[in-house]
Image (cartoon, rainbow, N blue to C red):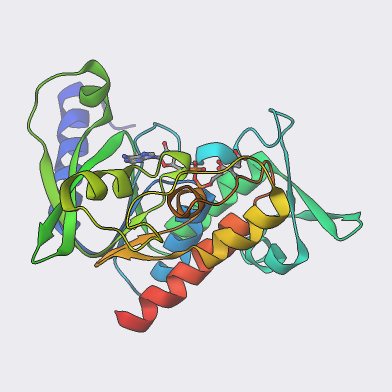
Length: 257
Ligand code: 48H
C-alpha cells in the first residue's frame, strides 16, 4: 500500500485546483446558482459541447429543491416537463389528475450528476458578487469565496470571463440586482426589477418559462429569478417550470453561441 504523505495530499489538491482554475478562467457560459434551473441548463449546454461553469455560493448544490414541500421530500411536476426528469433517470410516479411526483433528493442528486457527467464544472462555496461590463455588455463575473462574504472581510475579488452569464440565483435574483445597481436598465416592463408576486402556481409555472430571457446584453435570467425580475408569482413546490425554463434558456443560448 502507498504511504500517505499529508503534505503531498495538499499538493495534489492545489495542483489540480490551479490547473482547473486556469482552464475555466474564460468559458462559454457561467451559471450563477446550482438550483434545478441552473443544473438543467448546464447539462443541456454541456451536452451541446459548450464550456460551462456553475458557481454556487453554498457548499451543496440543489438550491430550494432538497426540501420538497415544507421538507416533505417530494416535488410535483406536470407532464410537460417530465421529459427533463426522464432524461436524467429521475423516477416519477403518476399521481393522477395530471400530476407527477418525484423524490426531491433523487431530483437534486441526479440533476447535478447529469450536469457533471455532461461535462459542466461546478465550483461550490463561491459567490458571484458582481459582473464585468464592457460597452454595455456583460463579459464575465466577479467572484469571491462565500466564506469571505459571510465573514464580511474586506478582500478584493477575482474575475472570470464568459460569453454568456446566467442568473439562476432563485428568489433573490442577485445578478440582476447587481446589474440594476451598476448599469441601470434591464429588459423588463419598467426597466427595473419588478419584484416577485405572491403564490399562484398556475400562473407562476407558465410565466417562469415566458419570463426566461436575455435581460441585459450577455445575461439571461432563468428559473425563480425570472419571475422575481419580471414581477410574476411564486409557485410553491412545483418544479417543472424551473426545468422548462432551464431548457428554454439552453435553446436560446445555443442559437447564438
Ligand atoms: C452563487 C448563488 C448566488 C450568488 C444565490 O433557489 P434555487 O433553487 O433556484 P431555481 O430557480 O433553480 O429554483 C427555484 C426553486 O428552488 C424555488 O425556490 C421555488 C420553486 N420556489 C417556489 C416558492 O414558492 O418558493 O437555486 C438558486 C441557487 C441557490 O443554490 C443559491 O445558493 C445560489 O443559487 N445563489 N450562487 N452566487 N450570488 N445567489
